[in-house]
Length: 271
Length: 100
Ligand SMILES: Nc1ncnc2c1ncn2[C@@H]1O[C@H](COP(=O)(O)OP(=O)(O)O)[C@@H](O)[C@H]1O
Ligand SMILES: [Mg+2]
Image (tube, rainbow over all chains, first blue to last red; front, side, top):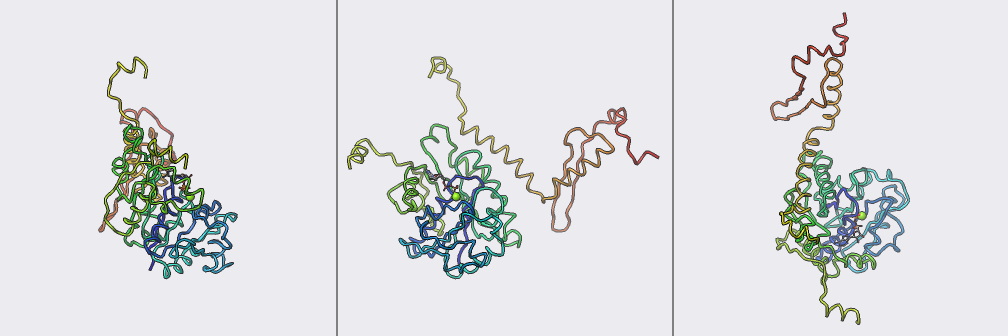
C-alpha cells in the first residue's frame, strides 16, 4: 500500500517540481517503487524535468476522463526501473481535475507502488487542493524568504484542515520542511534567514536543506533529476532528504553551492 | 563604504533578523484568524452591521471567538462600546425599535 506524499508550497517557483523529480528518482534508486504525478494542469513541467516529455501520449486528465487506461498514460523511466511518471495535460481547463477522478487513479496506483509523489501547482486553488487532499505526508518546500515562509504557513493550515485526513478526523497529514535555495554565504552575511529562524517560525520537522546550486539548472537542461549527480551538493542534499523520508536518522548537513577552486576552474575550462 | 559609515559603528540589525521578526508578528495574527471555522469572519461582520443600526461603534471593535470543548462550546462576542457620556450625547442613528 503506497504512501501518498504531496510536494507543496503555496508560492510558485520555490522548487516543488525540482524536488518532486529529485525525491522521486532518489526513492527509486533506493529500490522503492515510485510514481510521480504532475498536478499542475495547464503548465505541465514535471515531464521535462524528468526528461520524458517526448514519450507523453496520454496523460492524467485523459485517464480521469476515461479516454485512456492508467497503464497507457504511465511512463516508465528508462534509467530507473522502479520509477514511473504520470504527466498532466497542457491544454485542458483546470476543472478537468475532479476529486472522484483523482481518488480513483490514486487507489489504482496504491496497490502497485510504495510511494506516490504529487507535484502540486502553486497557489491554494483547486489543483493545489486536490494534490494535497489524499496525502499521508507533505513536503513543504520553502525558500528562506518572507513571502515563501508566509505561504508555507498558510499551506500548513490547509493541510491540517482541508485534507481527507483532517475531514475524517484521522491522524493528521505529516508535514516535512524542505528548505531549498539555501545560500550559507548570504546567511553568514545576515542577508538571508538561517535554517533555525525558519524552523522556529514554522515549527515542523526538517527533511533537508538544499543549497542554491547551478547544478539544478544544468540538470533541468538535460532532463535528469539532480539527485543523479551525487557529486553535486544539491544532489547529495536531496539524497540525504530521501533517506530521511524513508525514516532513516542521518545527520543534517548544511552544504554550500559548488565553489570550484581556481585551479579546478582552470582545469574545468580547458577540459 | 563611505567614510561616514566607517565611523558610525552602531550595531546594525541584519535584514534577515528583521525578516524573522516581521514574520513572527504577521503569522501570529494570521494563525489566529484561521483558527476558527470559516463562518466566523462573516458572523463578525454581520453582528457588527446589526449593532451599527443602533449604536455607533468606532472601528472594528467586535471580537467573536468560538471555543470548542468536549462537554460544551461557547461563542464569545466582545463588543467595545464608546463610554457612557459619548453614548448619551451622541443621539446616534434613530433605531426602528424605539420609533413607536
Ligand atoms: N536549489 C536550487 N538552486 C538553484 N536553482 C533552483 C534550485 N531549486 C530550484 N531552482 C530553480 O528555480 C526555478 C523554479 O523551480 P521549480 O522546481 O520549477 O519550482 P516550482 O515547481 O515550485 O514552481 C527553476 O528554474 C529551477 O531550476
Ligand atoms: Mg512546478
